Image (tube, rainbow over all chains, first blue to last red):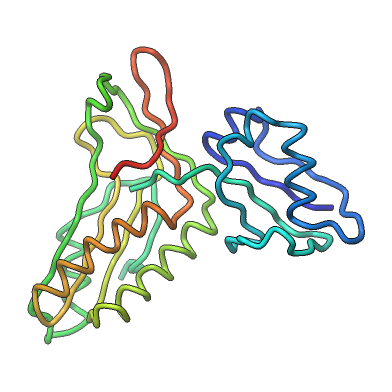
Amino acid sequence: MINVLFFGPVVERTGIRDCQIPCVEGMTLQSLRDLLAARYPHAFEIVCFCAVNGQQVRDLSVELVDGSEVTFMAKFSGG
Amino acid sequence: MKDAVRIQQDDFSQDEEITALKAGSLRMGGIATFVGCARDFSEGRAVSQISFDAYGSMALSEMNQLRLDAIEKYSLLDARIVHRLCTVTAGENIVFIAAGAEHRVAALDACRWMIDELKVRVPIWKKEVTPEGGAWLTSHP
């Protein structure tokens, strides 16, 4: 399974803080994003960044492995 | 001694943080600090409270890396970053940043750089509560 986390303004739009998505062979960050964006289109309007296992990833072609923790995040506003 | 980089609910003591920073080196001739605090007005609206959400593990990791980057980039003797995660009202502290260097220019430049970088690198989100309800913020310049 892929463990997906949402935070802050994205949670407000998904209505959930996390979900589990079955990991299929060859699944990329882009395909996971597409799957979730179809499920939560309003939330993904504000998604700017994603991270895999706590590391920001810009290359969406990266392949995911079972147990990965993936986060789709809005623009940060701390400080 | 408390860690140089922390995320915590409770308020911080600027005196304690500066004392800890100075303890690292007697060669420190300049210390610059930044304190971010809650305002009661934002974008034309009264603000009664500010709350936060964070990807805690990544936020702490990024803050640690940010400190190391600042030390290297500005040849600092030490640096500290503390961010609160709780609900605050106007006037309460949110974030503390300190940079210690041999001279003032490096300390001042590094302090400014760290708060600017924190805003774009660290996964923390701020929600302002107004009479019209809550609103998640996009970052301020």
